[in-house]
Image (tube, rainbow over all chains, first blue to last red; front, side):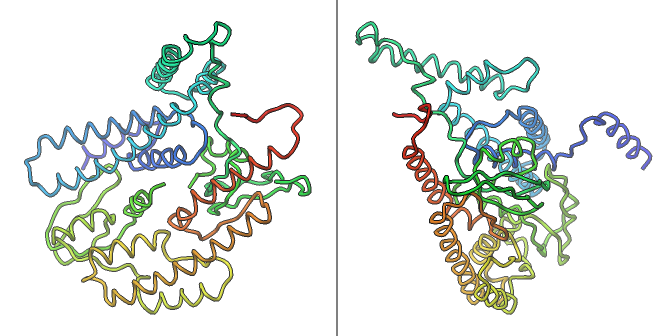
Length: 222
Length: 185
């Protein structure tokens, strides 16, 4: 009993800045997954969550190596691991899909990012985006551009690739109450009006109106 | 979102099972489970309940709301009200489907429940279509969707959002813009 107690208190000291249980971590990953799935633009990279989840999975898989086959406990753990791994890869895949779709704009945003601001891309995603840009450019060059008259041999990727449409409508659920959210009118005859987002309520509105709230975690896309 | 992914989320809902084996408390990443004792009820996520059921290691206790009388009440309420009534579980449709497909022998009056839930679903989705129609024809910019479940939202998501976006683009190209902001390719 004494041992267990001292171990627990040790741990709470270690994690004093970051008190997140594994269950909360998984919940965070699921939130990030759904937000990424439904938001029209690439969200801020959650590399920290991804790394922590990977750590949990590797740790658990390591433990399972020592368990004999056919053990019911092991099979339950394995099922849980598979479920978490599914969310994790679906999350990373939806990010890659957006990077492939909007790479020039994402790289531009990354370039203009102020020193110290959190990056929108993980280092691996950044390398992927750069490589994707280089490959696309060299592909266009070899296939078509070099056969063009000299004055038409360049393509501005920023103009050639459409931007993410931030005015898209999204469904969302409110985690923290928000007041006075301005809803812009759809037509010139309508007037803009303010609404309050009650905790737990669900809404359909334009992503651009609530984008900062998604980033801060006050609302969740669904 | 694929319906199977909504189902995946529904599988996290907790259900009560009565296991026929014993097992110590388990420490999963997502939380602790158990201990399991033969004949004693224990709460587990649905994914585990279904797996144990398939291996014939447990009996699933149907959720409290999965009851003919309660569902009949909900159905009447749903038909009477114009808005969406609160539903006993945010994943009622997926839970019904999964439980009835894999554990119908543990659920009394399974066929009646299937029909009732289908009725409730149909009523709600009809309302959803009506409100989507008025949302579009009135050019609304905001809608409150309380009590709507994820699966219900998912049935209209692609169609509704794509239509709204296309209409927005069409309208935007009608209105003269001072500086050409839209893309023309």
